Length: 620
Image (cartoon, rainbow, N blue to C red):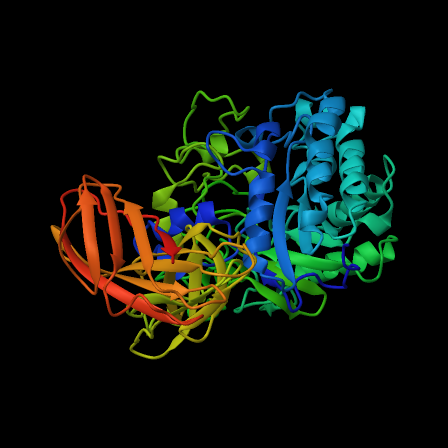
């Protein structure tokens, strides 16, 4: 049974760490400092629902989220992004569905998503949906005879498929009791003028009451999605003046009512409530790439010789123009995801996973419906939508959504707040060692390890099962529950410090849960490697009596995955034939009381890889 919706789904809840993004981030130099941060899962084409090109599908992500939740309140963040005629003003993020294919959007995209989200297996999750980025705001600024109108946006405004598509998505997904829908609401550099903001609120309200939806299906709005606008400009406000001239008259602000995302988000919420949305709606702000740190970050206000000098000298957003949106040079990671950071703001979130491209720098043939937008070309001199400025885009970028290592590295360098809590601490904790099981049952495994050390202090550990984060703990011990009987599980552990630095993962430990036969003899065997020097290693196996009666003997068997050969073994009797290994108890350690353990160790040689085997244990 689903829990009743809460006012702020992020309050008091953990948030899902996408293991695919986390692995890519951790593989980058320095990326382990942020690899444990939660990011959204993008469903940006029909194939993504089931999983495409080897990637995890929606159900696989939700299963992993249930595992990470471990019974506690837990948010999983999804981006719903495949409207017909999607993103009519930006070719890089065009979609697979044509302008008139609303029926396919409903039956092949939204309906399957809704069916999966409604599965009772996921009723304990708080599922937060970002609904259809950019499309509705495009109907305000880029259609209907505006100076920046495009034929594609004119078509989508005329046929109503953006409005009706969003309405259908809100109604269908909002019918799932543990779903929270947040509609995309652009950013201050797009909709911050009165002539844009009020019409935007009205068209979002129109969509929220279309195709069976009501405002009750909307829990809030998300701003700055996949964009770079500063969260807070610290060196000037919209109310400042220089020699009697308002900063609104500067070329950068250009009469905008807002100079940053926090002020815009809070104002948008007030306008939305006034337009008829529920007074409890909250705002999300995407802070994944709006940190603007590094050497170019101004230390204080600009000179007061003129309003442009004052604004340009003090603004932390170093883009050439607020309309620049593609792979922006000089950007950095922003505030880390945080619940309820400001009044009216439900959370700072990382909707756009850092390191994923906004669009290719040149035309790239693809089957994802993604075109080439000159705003992603670093040589492009601009258009009316960015005031005919250079694009400010990084070179050599891949297709939208594909991994862009150079951008990820720049985001790390320019992070603000800086990684390491201000630049002082960049040292990771030592790798946890001595990972072992302390008890095993048919449905649970208890783990312990030797505590890591750090130049300041270790603040916690992340525990991974099969490479997927399953939980975190402040102590060097963890209990993993909800497991299947007679099943082998592989565990690793990573240490963290207060500055966000993370160690490499520990050596893997394989543990096989007990059978669920309900009594008598039973045992489990836990495998670990204590040292490995590239051509040989020392291993250890702990045997635990998981039955209800004492054992008189035990036998552990496994098959090597490589060419490992045991050269000596102690506290047991060895038989190895090829890759098959059997170890029986020694005369003095076969008798184990229920819950008691014994162990044996060995030395072995190998070449190539040294994967951990899966062990089986038989008790007599």
